[in-house]
Image 1: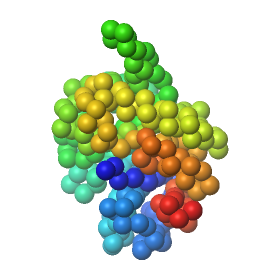
Image 2: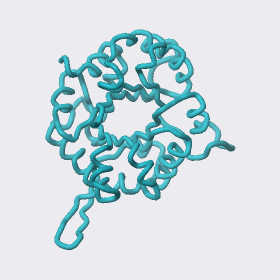
Image 3: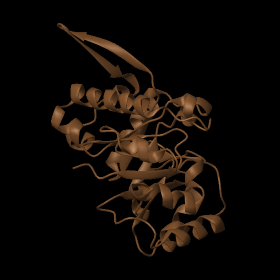
Length: 252
């Protein structure tokens, strides 16, 4: 059984005080983690404050990004080893904004995925709608190239723990979400790609999220789809009341 995951990505927003206030405000208002898991990926300089404020430990506090080396002369980067020591369970890898603005290549993203696993965390791997076609005998498979590249050299044991977020770049921050059918198709194709790389059993156990202009008024329709196991929300995760609604989508 795939437990739904409602995750937020704050990007470069809020202050430390605002981050603490958010965590305090959602305490006692989120579902039990074994029913619907919730997570916020926040800027690295907020994480310790958020962990301290998270007294109920229902909300997972994650990182928005990290580097692929554990230590070294990499000014301004965030060490995955340090994140793990803090108790951070999730790190976003390969977000379209990191690809576009910071020129992160498929190779860099693959190295980051391996670094996150090496340090005992789970990567939330983002991929765009770019897809290719592979022919094998008489069968034609649609392959999500960014997923294939991100998982190069990743063992089945690690891949089984991964979270993948389908985020069509045209929908991010646009206010226009993909239709529920478009979201389902993208998530289904990612699952098929995982099955092609590993196995049907592994693919059926991996959680696949949809990201792109997710709001309280469209989340229920998205979550009704068979292959959508959760969402990665941007703007709607910044407001505590909106995030609480997303987390409690079953009551909307």
